[in-house]
Structures are given as C-alpha cells and as structure tokens.
Amino acid sequence: MEQYYFRQPNGKLGKSAPCLYPQCFENTQFSRSPYCSLHQKVLKNQTMDLFNSISSKADKKQWELLTYELIKRKYTCTCQELSNLLKHFITEKLARSQMDAIWETFKVNKNVEENAELVEDRLVNVKPLFS
Ligand SMILES: [Zn+2]
Image 1 (tube, helix red, strand yellow):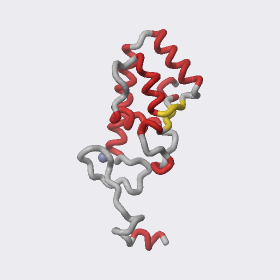
Image 2 (cartoon, helix red, strand yellow; image 1 turned 60 degrees about the vertical axis):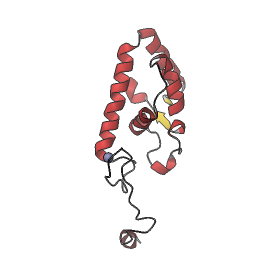
Image 3 (cartoon, protein in one colour; image 1 turned 45 degrees about the vertical axis):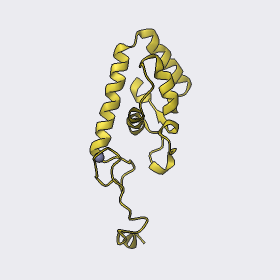
C-alpha cells in the first residue's frame, strides 16, 4: 500500500502541498505543518518578536491581568479570543498573518486536518510565553 501510494504522483494522496508562505513553493506534503521548516522558524520568530514588543510596552498591571485571564483558560484559547485579550496591548486587532504565525507557533492540534478551517477558530496554547 505504501509503495503504491508513492507511485501515484498525480493521485489524490500524492498531491503536492506547497508551503503556505507567500512566494514559497517548498513541498510540505509529508510535514505536519502547512509551512516548510524554514518558514515555520520564520513564523515562530515573528511571534516571539510580537510578544516581546507587547511585554516590553505593557505595564505590570496590564500584563498581570493578561496572565490572569490566560490562566483561567489554562493558557488555551482560539486565535480570535487571544486577539480580544491582546486588544489592550496592541492598537488594532491581530492581523490574519499574525494569527497564522501565532497558530504555527502555539498550535494545540498538531495535524493540519485536526484544526478549524478558519485561523480565528484554531486553538493555541500560549503557556510557553509564561514559563
Ligand atoms: Zn516555505
């Protein structure tokens, strides 16, 4: 079965899956991420930069409030909920590309097909930011 699968470049299972990052055509067919390994790192760096800038701008009380809200949720929420929680720290809502980056970094469900179609509805766990 496995062998047959690999011999079907044009079959449904053999369909190639290019990285979702703009202008990147790296195949992610055998990856658990819709991004290639290079762009997984790029997105993780973007996410860490975002949260570093938020934490450096936030005052202690605001940050404690955010931590409190996240602990209540066991650090797990959808990207949309996270965007709402962060609205005191960033002037606009999280952009779609920022949500994509946050999801790639903190996704709860590792397999692409186990996640909601809309990035807003996908679950993330941001505990690594606080430990
Ligand atoms: Zn890529």
